[in-house]
Image 1 (tube, rainbow, N blue to C red):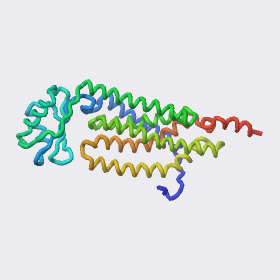
Image 2: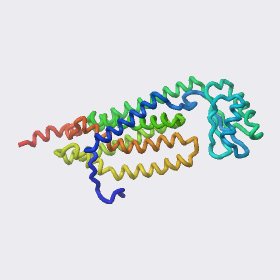
Image 3: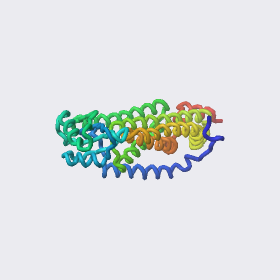
Image 4: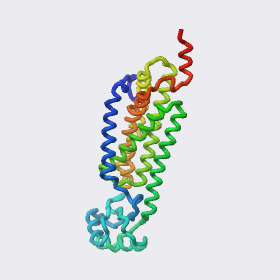
Length: 311
């Protein structure tokens, strides 16, 4: 099955500098926002209290927030969870009470809205644990990038494709982080998991394109590199678009039907899918081309073969 009814021939490499400029602008905006506004880190990283509260009737989020503020809770984050009778409350790390005390205090504060209110789940994360999780998340991302660089260099026999893959893989999570910084959506461990999934998903598309580039160089060793890259991307374009569309349908369903718990995870995946599609086409291959990629780099024996074939 093909997405297009005929083989496309889009001149991707001819317009690469335009897309370089667009990527550069988006990355700069993302980095400026990250360093000036920062991220709205969830209690996974900052420490604090996360409570799931069940009411016997429908309650208003604003009423819950006002009730908790009146009871002495500082800056509570309140949102619905699953249904209009279930509420998730997040409290900052300055809530230093023991778990049992926090549970009792919460139930006591909210009994004015519903005498039968219950705290169904309570998680308390200390600042030290939050700091360790933040460090572990950074190590996971850096380790993944280093592993990708060496795998691509070994798999395709050239650092040029490896560099293109790394820049494309960096491009995608930077845009995701930029979105979370600008929107101030809660940044938690599921979002980190989504970013790692985006890296793997984007890399998979990049490797598919690189495999086709290698095949085209093998059969068209005398063709200009830009032509080979354009042909390779066009030949894999239907596959790329179809897999992204199908995956996006599932992610959009999670975004709108999964509730607030999956909101950040779904948003990160959706942005990453769009950015990954774009970067696997315009960033990874284009960077390799501008680094001087040709058939000799993908097939080290090609140079000798070409020399031997000269009259």
